[in-house]
Length: 255
Image 1 (cartoon, rainbow, N blue to C red):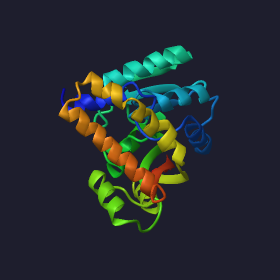
Image 2 (tube, helix red, strand yellow; image 1 turned 90 degrees about the horizontal axis):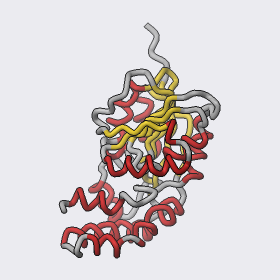
Image 3 (cartoon, rainbow, N blue to C red; image 1 turned 180 degrees about the vertical axis):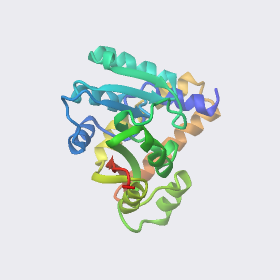
């Protein structure tokens, strides 16, 4: 099994593939101003196994949600959970890359992307996804973010190596404004979104994951990389988190 398949195997049984929480998704919906009673069209991009998708479907009672992920295993898990929750009829799974979303231009009331836009890059994502939104349409994206203007060299080097676009909230807001959005909200994911909702459940599955994969060198290397990330978070969590960014597509410039 190659490294990519191992990543899928490690994460496909999890409720979340990154930091987050149902309460935080609800908070973002409230800040967004989306009408819970309106027949909205929403795309959840990089939806994983559907944690955010199911909250969106629960709160936005008449919305039709396109759940986009490039991994069919994740979409299968999402739709099984949606069937159990009784919301599968309003969710359309789409197996697609972020670079080719198979969406129509100007058709969406909102784009949602929790902990996933890094796969294409924040600046590229907000620029390219804008065309799918109606005028005034909402963009919500959570993004790894520095919380302080300076930080220890060890954690700076780690995250700049993992994701060079990591930056301060002011820089992310500027990217949104430069790409035709009006920011309307921002908050930071609290520690429990990392520890209780993401890292601890992942840790609890390490032994079974290694057993499934014969304790191969690749499987052990993946577990050690995840443990390294967790250890760094435990030590340096006051310096970074995910920022939740909400913005609306600004009106087109007047002629």
